[in-house]
Image (cartoon, rainbow, N blue to C red; front, side, top):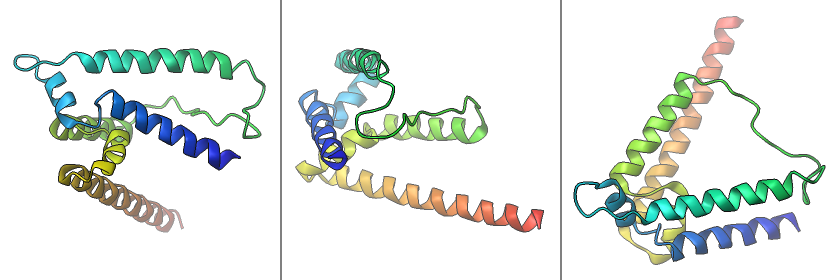
Length: 146
């Protein structure tokens, strides 16, 4: 049942970003172009997403446990470090240059556009590279402490 809920959630998210036009990178790029062809609709999409999230959290956290898990899995760290700031900066630069956010980019694959495919391949390569770098760093840290 949990996998079905995940699938339905993904389809709902993909439908939402498609209907809102967020799978079109020009929507985002035009939002960022405040001195040219500025398109403020991204503010409405973000506002609607925040409202749905706010209401959803209010409803969900009235329960002691989630519907399809034994406990809530929430981030606990409040530490802001170079890794977090660097990742946020890299995300922002990538978003601003390409007009794609990871979720809408994956959803846009159904249209088969070259820029969507290229972005998702580059994103996957970046994730793999980051994982390999983290493994290497952990390995070196283990060797140093031995």
